Length: 418
Image (tube, rainbow, N blue to C red; front, top):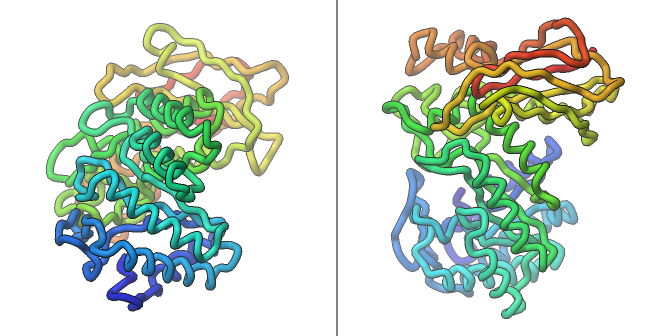
């Protein structure tokens, strides 16, 4: 959003309204400090539908002053609470997507001017970078620059996607990348903040089949649970922030889809009509779990032995209730099949008596939209029908400690005790 229109000429109305709302729902913002104000830009190169200017500033001192004014306003308005916010400098300066026309050194100069401005306001405000587009990109050089030049940094931030046009839904690049990033940061003992991650950095336009369709489908819900399971299992130190990209398909970079607007392969957990997608429901399931996790095993044959995993935990709001999530996940282009597996829980656990599914026929609003004829501009009633189709429906099953379950390919089966 635009906040600066000339030296000392600023408007913080939008900033305040968004932060106020986030605080009202007990969240804290990550403030991405980009793009370049027109009056301060050294060039006119832009990116995306919103025409964000991606050139370095024409004057670093004026940029420093502008950031100082912004940080002063936020500190004055929110007091010590602002120390819980994160200030991230720029977006993907090292990527091939055109978000920064300067050199790597130009970015470090910008970071220096930004970080010192923020710390002038309050040494306890938290600032970091380099906000690069791959899990480990620029981390070593960024840390070295800050240490050599005594520039403050409170966290290291990167993005971490499984793939783009290829490797969609492949967990390995995410887990490996996060692990490698952590190993580069361990020596300086600051948090790793992942401000974007998901199954692919590609989004669709609705104008034909695309790998981005994965964002709208049950397969991505299985990817999310499988990825979270593997991240938790394989990383000794977890990122402080692991922020899914993105919350909603109301997303300005490409503009709105002009075809198949309801389900066009957008990044969001919600579509443009605020209909929850399958991955939203996977977040809902994971949110219900408590911090105490239990060992559970699944036994299958062939591909099913490797593609089906399990997460078992206590319910956060009802400690007597056991939650078990089976996911059947394979990357987008990999062979996949329905699996019948046996679930084994430790002795003494309560019997599982209810199930809910995320698959082609359950919690799948895209299929409901297809069934109603794929309306380009759905009516209020059609939107409500899609929302109803997205809901997790729990049904009773015969309770048993060791049971055989069928988990369709690229789907999620949720189980719980009474």
